Amino acid sequence: MRFFLELQYKGTKYRGWQRQLKVFSVQEEVENALSKIFKRKVTTHCCGRTDAGVHASQFFAHCYLEEKPTFNLRERLNYILPKDVRILRTFPVRKMNAQLSALSRTYVYKIHGNDNPFEADLSTLFPIHELDFTKLEKAAVFVKNGNDFKAFCKRPDLMNHTRCRIDQSFWSKFPERNAISYTVQGDRFLRGMVRLLVGTMLEVGIGKMPLEQFEDHLMNQTTLAEYKSAYPQGLYLAGVEYPDGFDALDEKY
Image 1 (cartoon, rainbow, N blue to C red):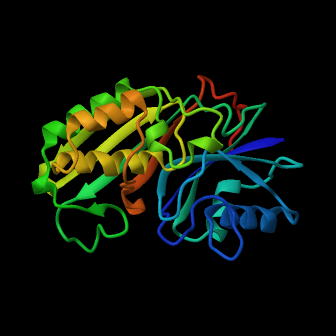
Image 2 (image 1 turned 60 degrees about the vertical axis):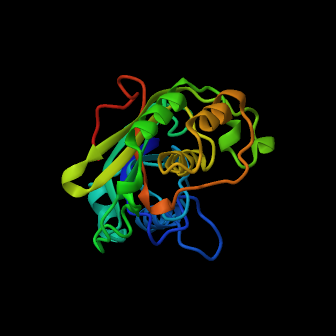
């Protein structure tokens, strides 16, 4: 039986979701917990990878279980998992695939302007007062109107194609906290694409890159002279959309 896991995690101490040799990964923590519970190796398949230090406020993975649990799987997993990885739901599905069945993914990038120790691992410190917010908003519109993000992919030669459909792209202000954020939703994202977009838009916002040059990179896929990738701690995978009904069976575990 195929089971979906909905989870969230703080990525600070992990080298991303994907299991790797000799480093901490979220996938390893989740698979080890599942294997401990079911006394056999359990492999997970995810909705998308996250880079080292990147967080997820909503993330999905699926796995195959030989039998239906006779206990609360979510509670059992959360008892074993470290506190920076939490399972929100577990439920069986007929044939949904965590990665291939996803219709869209939403990322949020958080930036704070005060040197606040409580924000250090969960947001990126940046001199917000130096930003031209109007330029940021215009750059975000250019992103929404773009359809080929070759300029924001470090290794486009490794991709079948670099086209993405962007449904939402906008900046938000939170003056009471001296903070801003960027939200982008699309059908797919190239590896490192969101951090490259944010890093380059911040260059536009502080006047180091003309807005017209940013538009040219997006519309004509001209290669960036220098990659300005935003720091990982501000980035969150914040939402994954699946078809209505979710293909889930009417059972909770």
